[in-house]
Length: 190
Image (cartoon, rainbow, N blue to C red; front, side):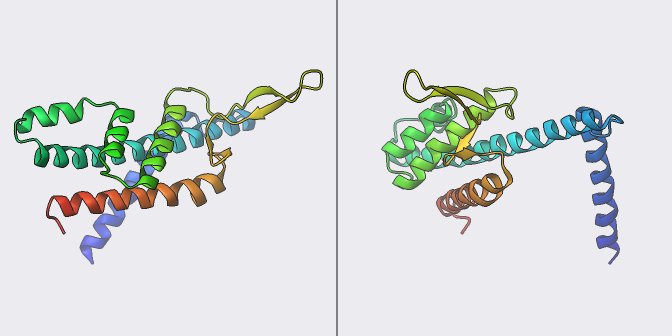
């Protein structure tokens, strides 16, 4: 019981620290309601962006382990250090393509990984994610401007609650768990 209470106190202190950081970094306690609203929107967007980047990095680490294991088993001439160097220096897209070519991931996983890399790139290479882009659509003479979100997933704005929580997270959560299972099996942890 005492251990539980200690964790409750630690969790409460950590939560308070996170709220303080959030308020200081994003001005989420601004007195002006409009400024507070805009600050909260920015904070929300940064939480979602960081989750995408974090998930991508976690999956990328698993792909590094899968490719390393394959190369270590297939090529006895490379030292462990050389193999690690080769795998760790690959960019995300290269890593995904090699895992796909070598059939280290299933075809559907390969497509999902490419899509995750595209989404991560859209998140990482744009500063403001909640301002829609506009493009001209339609035949000449009757063209009109159409707003499109910066980060699209399955044809929808990824940063809506439904697309993010109900579609993106379950799909990539499953992918992460499947790859983690594969890595643990390779490493003899299962």
